[in-house]
Structures are given as structure tokens and as C-alpha cells.
Picture (cartoon, rainbow, N blue to C red):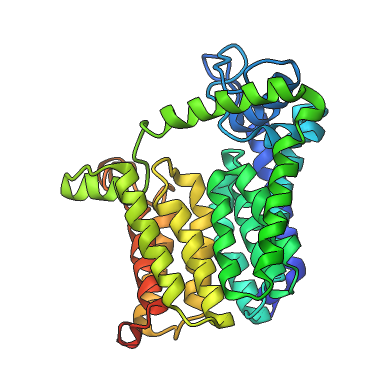
Length: 378
């Protein structure tokens, strides 16, 4: 029976079925009292394409069309063109399938990990991927792009790695941190040149449809949104943990900069080995979530990819297994009906318990990269 759950075709089937069932379930729900659908994030992404090409401000509020703002790059709005051409009943399933299958393909191509470890990772991250798809979010795609950047570096393809990195950054800005991985590999100059070329290409691509002058205005609108958005909330993050557990509200920029300093220190003091490159990838996947002041529940599929890599590259001692189980319970199960509603509303959500185990894992990863082996053998 155990061998059955280790079949790659089974995971391909389950991921595909999950994407389709989630899409059908969301499409089947009636709009709410305000007329908004149960898959508004997808509609926001899709609408951004039309707003961009119509010469409108894609970052403005369109309450008659969608419930929230578009917050991603002009290139991402343009990327939604194939989906914009389709009715929602076709576009939403394809969008969720893209998020699910590109991520699973990356997991199955992960170097260093064994075939069984890749299967384990695929099952572990599935519940959080489902949460992301239920919100028609892009987090599965974001995680996939970060993994593909690492895979390309391992395969000695620095220009391709730069392309995946820039694609991740134009999807969600923090995707650019995948560039840190290049520190562990040769041909850094080719990677840097690739990064520059891909950035220019994706930054200017929308100009083919908008013109340079309007595209410049679009980037100014985007910058204004990002500045105001930073003051919004603390999310399921280190900032949220400090605030809810200790009543401390330090500067968001300050917390992020301290976290970045610790991350970079761990990267630069670590020995340049394949194992440590994989650990840095895990650290990055966790860092971009727990130091994101806007982190929400659907974002944690990215963090769970990091948790999986941390566990699979460790000693898998009893305490590491216990921490993995605790992480899975609080990250993947706490938002579900397995936890009674009073627990979720009075304990899990107010005390950002979804983020806390991920913060603990990131700290342990950081210590491991810095060479504090004794913390790993308790």
C-alpha cells in the first residue's frame, strides 16, 4: 500500500483533480450581496489586462468590476492575456492547473532530493496549495518560479535561472530574492547579465501595447500603490507575531531589514556546497512569507515548500519530526474545521499561530547555515 502513495502519476492525478474540483466549486458559488464572485482574485488578475490595454490605471479601484486592487507588475497584467480571452468557466480551471502543475513539475525535478523525498514534498505542500487555489491566488506559481530558478542553477543554466528569477519578481516583487542563490554557483557574471537583460525585456514588453509614455505612467501608479500598501497591515508575519505576542510594534521596514541582514549573513558565512544551496532555497521560501507584512493564509504554500526542504535535508531526528508535525497542524490544519471555530477565532488567528512554526523553522535553518551544528543534534 505504501508503494501506491509513492507513484508520480498519482500525484499528477491528484493535483490536476484538486485544481479542477476547486475551480468548479468556486464557479458554482453564487455571487455575494455586493455582486462579487468566489474567485475575485482571478478576476482582478484578468481585469488588469483589459485595464492596461485600455489606457486606464490598472492599480485604481474598480468597485463595479472587482472587490480589491490589482497590485502586481504591468508584465503580469499582460501575461493574463490568454486567460482574459476565455470565459471564467474555462479560464479559472486553467489558471489553477497552471499554479498546481508547474509547481509539481518543479518538485519532481528538484536536484539533491531523492525520488521518495520529492513524493513526500508533493504530498506535504498539497493542502496549502489547495488553500491558495481556493482563493484563486498566484502563490503556487510564485513557489514554482523560485524552485525552477534553483533547478536551472543546478543544471548550469545561469541565463535560464535569471529568467525564472525575473519572472518571479514580476509576479511578486519578493521573487527577486531567488537571485541570492547564484552566490553558490559559478558563472555569476552570466547570471547577472541575464538578470539585467530579462529585467529590461519584461519591464518594457508592455510598451508594445501601451506605448512608452503610458507605460511610464503605469509604473508611477504602481509605485504609489506599493508605498501606500506598505502601511496597511502586519499579516501572518514576524511583524504580526511581535505585535500580537509581545505588544511590540517596531518599524516594518526595520524588521524587514533586520531579517534581510540575518538572511544575507547566513548565506555568506555558509560553505558553498550543494546541500547549503538547497538550505538557502528553503530559507528564502520561508523568509519571503514570514517577513512579508501582507502575508495571508494562501501565501503559506510557499513557506511549506521551504519547510519540506528543511526537513528532508536534515537529520530527521525525533524533535525535527515533532516540529514538522506541529508545523503541519498549525499551518495546514488550523484554518480548517478540524479546529473548532472558537479556537480559530480566539486563539489561532489573533496569535498568528499559522506563522509561528514557520518562524521557528526559519531560525533553525539560519542556525544550521551559520554552522551551529549542536542545535541540530539535540
